[in-house]
Image (tube, rainbow, N blue to C red; front, side):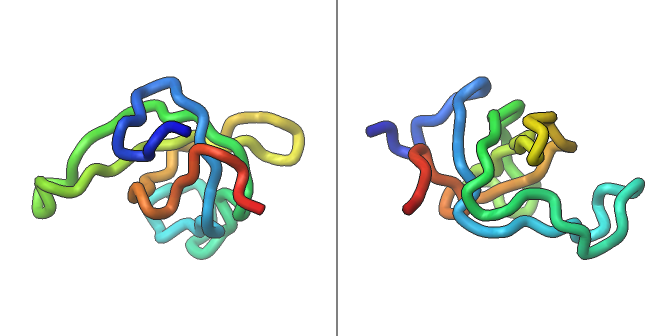
Length: 86
């Protein structure tokens, strides 16, 4: 099984938590559900937050119920799984 720390752009991941809009996606209401726990997503970018240079942030586009990819969501490694959590 692949470790989250070795993930690359294009890899498939699963949400281990519910993700809500913190206000950073302007066209959606703050608090809107972006991805439910268990949602499948694809990593579109990997980077670091300026004030946390040692912590990796993954931008993930999660699928909705119709399998359409949503807006990119910033996620920490411990919020993502490489297999569907039971």
